[in-house]
Length: 253
Image 1 (cartoon, rainbow, N blue to C red):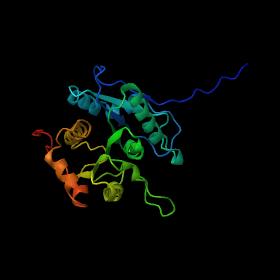
Image 2 (cartoon, rainbow, N blue to C red):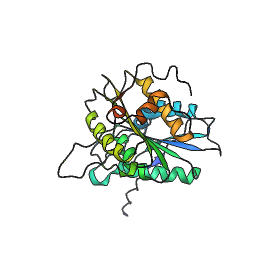
Image 3 (cartoon, rainbow, N blue to C red):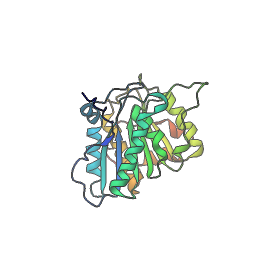
Image 4 (cartoon, one colour):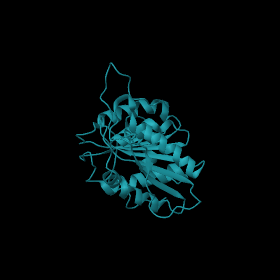
């Protein structure tokens, strides 16, 4: 009996919420969380659920501008050390978006381990912006090189992190942002005080901040005053900007 070949795993883009015509002028790729080490296949249902609401909001906000929003479905659940599977899938997703839509700007938006993937894959030539929400980053290790930041040059970068995150150390994202800011002025970081990894207490504010950043980065709309101030402020002020309760309720572009 002939032995069947093991199917090749492939990453894929999920469906964008709402209709997408020929007039796409920008795309946001939503990178769900993952695990540090795992060769298991991700649950497509659970992965999509973690970014679905944010994808819908962004697609609605950018409909008139021609925004396409896609969740990225990984091949593996894990980052898996030097394999960096999630970052590779993020880079593949950027290639696929270019193949579908042509020369349009891309924003990589990642949550948790997906935030690390977004930051790592930012060097793709089509990426103009990165939004990392509660990014999981490795502990500083004298024996290993630090998490790279050169690929962030020339991109607009926003990091959002809860100060009570017990899963992804917020101090590590601050350190990475500090290193990135030295070579790239367009880096800022917001802190969500007393919130944890899921940012559940300030979910609406984080979603509003994401919308504000994505619309500004991809389509040149004016950033809100807090984002402008964070980008302009020198470190550490612009990297420890508090996200105010009620952010987004009275934004005017």
